[in-house]
Length: 121
Image (tube, rainbow, N blue to C red; front, top):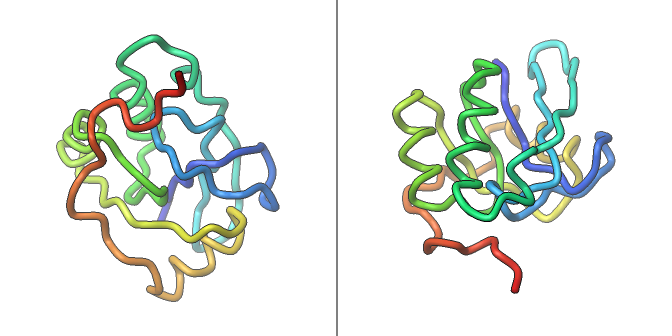
């Protein structure tokens, strides 16, 4: 299965970024082979629509699940429409979150964060 994990950096030892739409990048990982690539999140610095753009970025990679901390309502709608499940990640590395997902140890996110959750003032 191909998954995406919001990441603070561009390697498997980077911490998971709690923010989805404003994450620095996304790890795209095939959980069967553990092959991966990192995508810069062009939406991270956007003045608006970051969640929607980020959701489209991962949907374009045909992921089946996203692991993150929080997903806003607009991003949640895009992910849901694309058939992508969303899981709460742990405050550990990207690699550790991928392993936890493979073990079935992560909880599904069933509600979204408030609008503009990831914006910094």
